[in-house]
Structures are given as structure tokens and as C-alpha cells.
Length: 240
Image (tube, rainbow, N blue to C red; front, side, top):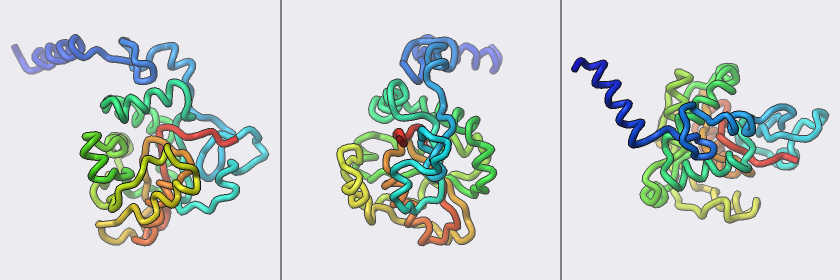
């Protein structure tokens, strides 16, 4: 049996034991995404907040409620989905039920949607939001790192997964109100790399809620010399 036949045999065997499932609903399918989800779960569309990319009701408004009263440390960002329904379910499976393979799907969708924008931003390196050692040990992986590596491969931009570090364990952001979220990530990040002078960096994470985590990381990156800090996430809260 030649190498190509062996490869086909292994792929068939893997599909038998590990059938492809829709990353947005979990049903076993042949396609990448089941037709129902492809129709119902649509990427975010205009009008969007100019800063964080949350969908907003009026095309006359420039910013969402959060960004209209918050000075962010990051410069701009975008997300793929509103964090609700099947998109929220999917990310929960990705993070807490070890569905790491979903990272490949998200990265492909993000690259298709925002690849041209990332090139326009002039991004020079991609950085995942890091987990604390404790959380990384408990979960077994960093979902943001999976996204960053997959996205870097698709966009042809280097991923740096070791220079931005979390130096303090923090409480889960989802359990806190906006004020406590900012306090929770204060001095939570550190930079171990060299100077970022003149660089435009892209932060990658799974969810954007208030932006406190991304602000905390962006603050550290700008102190290291970053000219601009952008972000991309899989999902984001509503901006009404």
C-alpha cells in the first residue's frame, strides 16, 4: 500500500471514529457547518461601533454605549459573532469541553471575514491572550493560543505565543461587573519579549465583553513600545 492510499485509509478511519460535527450545534455532518447553522448564525454586520466592533442600532451612531464612555488602551477591534445562542454554545464547548478542533473553524471564518482588514492595519505579529499557569493546568490548553496559531498560518503573520504572559491569577471575568472586571486584570499581564517599537500587534481571544482583559494586555504592549494594538475575537456582546 503506497503512502497516498495509507493517508486516505487513515482519514477514513478517523472519520469513522471521530465523525465531523457542526461547530455551531454539534450535529454529525458531512459539511464544515450544517445548513441550518450556516443560515441562522451569521457574522456581525454593519452598523458597528468604530472602536470595538459591537453591532449598534443606528447607522448615525459611531460608538456603542461602552466605548462612548470608556477610553480603551487598544486602538480598534472586531469580532465574528454576537455572543448569544449557538455561537455562545459553540465557544462554551470549545473552552470547557475540549473541542479544540473548533479553533480551526473560527480562524478560517475570521480570516475570510477580516483578513483584508488585518492587512490594512499593518499587523506585524499576532499574540494570544495568555492564561495563568493555574488555569492553563486545569484546562489543559489555551483556547486563545489555538486561535492565534491557526490565524497566523492563514494570514501569513508570525504568532508570538510566549512573550505576553499572565503574571497574576485572576477570577473569571464572567462572574464580575464592569468595574470589578477592570480591577481584576489590573497588573495581570507582563511582557518578556524585546522592544515592540514601531510594531502593530494583533491580540486574539475568544470573547469580548467589556474589553477589560484586552485593555490590560494592550496597556502592557504599549509600554513595550507597540505603535498600535488591535484585537480579533470569535464573539462579542451586544452594543445597544
